[in-house]
Length: 199
Image (tube, rainbow, N blue to C red; front, top):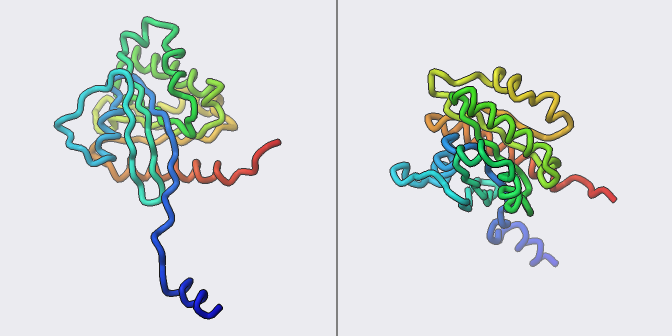
């Protein structure tokens, strides 16, 4: 018995494995999804090209690993095809959280398209109960809209009432802020793990 107590106090085994969460990352082409995820994975910025189709990245954090499915669809397709949600929804299954990246300095037309896509995602049956991280990217550009403007324009308060969501400004110039935003999302994912299951 003393030996077991001694081993428990003195002989630390390997650290427990970090939990892994499967996330889906959506947003219009040019919003910066690929660049943000590549920077979080410490990949070289010179080799970044826009995602066509989808890609999966394992984004490591100290307390979790996020397996992020990034969906890339040209903005022309988004504007011209109503069935694009069917295409995206193939990749929603099994997701535990959502990252939505928007270009806060985009044109009015593109911002309207982004708003419609975010509204669709927030109401999609496979995503509506999941935590959302909404990143207002390109805050370093002069035309960037503030977080308050984005919140009002996207009608987040009424639309997302009762849902778990985070809206944060971001840019590639401040990756620490991006990491902090992802840490908040991880906290929401951990809270979800500990919620009692509803019968």
